[in-house]
Image (tube, rainbow, N blue to C red; front, side):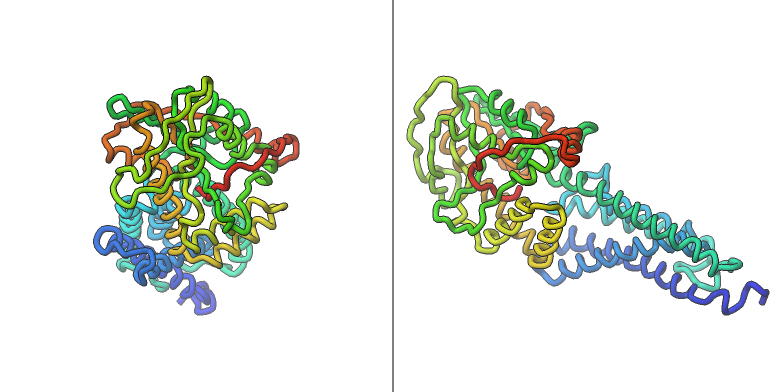
Length: 444
């Protein structure tokens, strides 16, 4: 035993080795569990196995960040063993850019789990080839002189690395997640946020899907409305509350003003001044696509498109969904960023992940069914129909229209918010006038 190879020089190293091995094992187990669930079991979101899968994923994420710090703190750890799964995990934490996936599509999630399992297998194989064992052993690692001093110096560097990587991953993950979940109907371009307009046709019938968000440049809403020809029908979004069940109406005016933008209430006001075909949403059919209510023939007024308010009323939503809408809407009414963050943390603690998924399922699919029931009632009268709804509604709309025999013929991206406007708004350089509120709209 050399002067450097002493029990004191290895003090604490088994702990780091244990954490590194735990990272390798949990990463592989989490990926294998995800593959099993996505391809075979396909468990429901409220099942015990799905909860176990989420907990494993969370533990793997924590161990990823700890291993990232250990790479700097403990130079003895074998980089060739840890880097393949570590890089794959960081790529996933950043939203897995370059891979099309969706939380609602188990097959797409299986691809991510397969990549993670493969990267972990590569790391274990490298350890076997270089050190003779599948997992890392303390006895196989070299001993460095003055490890305690090295650790003191590397500690601040590791902490800074964790902050930088964490913030960078978050900044990258949010846009990637939004783009993936909207299937490209939201896109973060080089100079601002864009939304997609997709043209779908079936014979003489044309439907235009226009992705929307709650806030944007004022001219976006005005130009979009001005581009819709008078002979077209707009199936408008906007949850109504005819029985006044909501204690607090969602409003995005504060958030819009804070970012130097305009709320979607601007578009709702323009719709309210159009030719209203159905002043109140008609009762949707109980089954199939046959209309339960025949809408009256619209009155043609030159220069204005026709509008059907095709969204649901809150009385048709579950109490849990109504509670979530009120809680989520209150975030955007916050006076400060810290207040908004506090409300967000309160919501995440109040609603479980399966509950949030169930709520979003109802907010998207049930409302989409209601809108397309209106389309079925009016498609014989209008050859051109617009669906300007939240971007997260668009993938389901597109799939349902394809099932009805429509096909995509073209698409284009439309700028909705410039980064320059947002930066100026955050710095207080831009002031946006308030708009009168339109119909309450549930989170997209």
